[in-house]
Image (cartoon, rainbow, N blue to C red; front, side, top):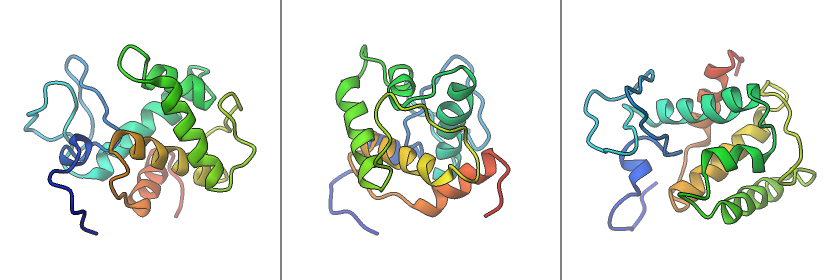
Length: 154
C-alpha cells in the first residue's frame, strides 16, 4: 500500500514502527549493522522492530508488574518526551474501537498468550499509529512477531 506523503515517518524508515530507543550498546535480533539514527534503532525488517517493541511492552513490562495501558505507556512514552496522557487516550480509544470495550487505561491486561494475542496486537497497532502518524501497518507481521516472542502457533 502506498502513501502519498513526502517522506515516511522515522519509525517506518528505520523498520522500527514502535520507535524502540537506542540504549548504550543495544543489541537486538535483526538490528541493522548500519545505525544512522542517533536516538532510535534501525532494524533489517519491520518484523524485528515489532519484535523488539513487543518484548519491551508485553514481556518485560508485564514481568515488572506494569500491566495496564497507562502503566506501560508511562514507562514506554514518558511525559519528559511525550504527551503521555494523549498517548494513553489514543491507545485506549483504538483498543476499545477494535472491540475491547472493557479495556480502560487502568484495566489490568492479561498475560501475553494465544488467548490474549488479539488484544496485544491491537495495543501494538495503536502504538504504531501514535509513533508513525497512522502510517499503514501490516497486521500479519505484528501477529507473526507476537507469535515468535511467545512461541505461539499461528
